[in-house]
Length: 377
Image 1 (cartoon, helix red, strand yellow):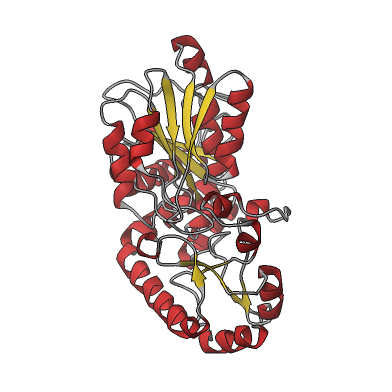
Image 2 (image 1 turned 180 degrees about the vertical axis):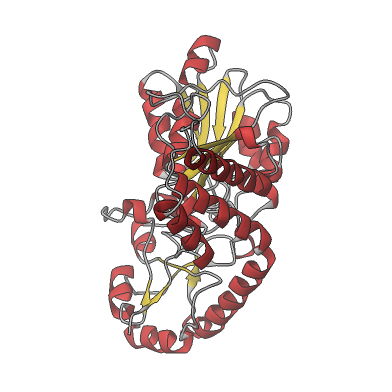
């Protein structure tokens, strides 16, 4: 019997109806959205426009503000590197980010730093949250961009986006959030119109890998002055060239619509699983990472005194599939930059495991897991 999959922050399974849409546009409706002379192309274009509307509905933006990409990593790069020319032309060459961002944000920011941009990296406390007062103190007249994630991928901790937006209300800097872990799950914060740029990933919301989007909200009638980082075709209003992957986009649209429709039911189910997990594991006195009150309901990042994460993962691998950090940096054995930024020692960070489930996760034998862990202590 296969172990139960508890690594949904790394990637999620496909929803059945999402799979059906994907297969339909892979095998039956395989037209090119750019083909304007026949019905195959027209139907493909309709599918793409429907998906734009479905994504736009989740964050309450306009369809023309949705730019399809290959995923949140590309969206992050476009949001950050796409403002390079604007920064150079305007003389605003200051960027603010945080110490707990995904590498898909930190590395593009580092690339701009090598070109002479100045970067302020905000700290986090043991709660794992950015303090909006630190952001307020870091803002300058020449600040071009603030990039702060919505939900951390390792801890599941929500960042105070509403307060961040309030701090930014009267400042002209562009505000970007990497919403790979929060889009379709924590819906209301992304509907704040002060958020200029929102990065989305399909495979975190029960859609396929290889597709995502960047929401680029207009300020009134003014477009955000992004410039493409890829060239050759002019698709997506000149921001992202290449033939649109209609099947992937249609599937992302379906996944987005389901996420909006079923949001409350999914959260309630995830909270139920979380309560079961904590009830079973509490007798082992786990150390839960960061703010317990401000974590998404489908995530637990925790450790057990004296137990290394690798040993725990191996000991449980026949029962459950869990991880000890971001899948994007799993080849690295260095301590998590997120957990060390929260004040953990390297040893403490290396002891942490991440358990993440979904509304579709089958019943987990939490008592059996607790017994297995107890035998290792």
